[in-house]
Image 1 (cartoon, rainbow, N blue to C red):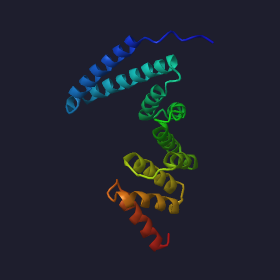
Image 2: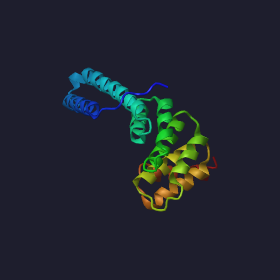
Image 3: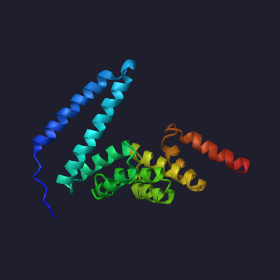
Image 4: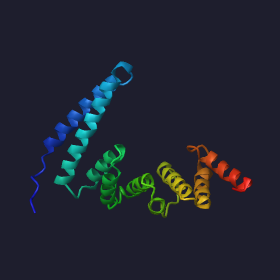
Length: 188
C-alpha cells in the first residue's frame, strides 16, 4: 500500500485563505441581479475546489472524523448522496459527531426513498434523549417526515406531538398534527 505524503499545515492555511477570498467575492456579487451568472460560476468553482481539497485532506488523514463530516456536508449540499453517506458512516464513529451524522444519514436515506432505514437512523440519533433542544427537534421532525412518507401515520403523529409539547411553533408541526387529526376525522 502506497503511503500518503505527510500533511503540511501550510496547505490548509492556503486553502482557508483562498476560500475566504472566494467568500468575499461571492458576498460582493450577491444582491446584484446583473451578476447572477458570474455568482453561480464562482459558487460552483468554490464548491468543486472545496470538495477536491477535502478529498485530499481525508486521504492524508483518514481517521479524522471532523474532516470526513465536513466532506460529507459538502457532498450532501451538492447532491452527491452516496458519497455523503460513505463519509457520514465514518463520522458517526465520533461521539461528538454521532447524532448529527445519524441525522444526516437519515436525510440521505430519505432522499433515496429508503424510509425504513431512515427511520432507524433518526431513532438511533434520538435514543435516550430526555431534554429536547433544537437539534433533537430537527431529528424528531425528520423522523416524523420519514414515518409519514413510509405511511406510518401513528408513528408520525407520536413524534410530531413530542415536538408540539415543547415548541408549538416549530416549523409546520402544528399544521402537520392538525392534518393528521383532520384525515382521521374524515376517515382516510
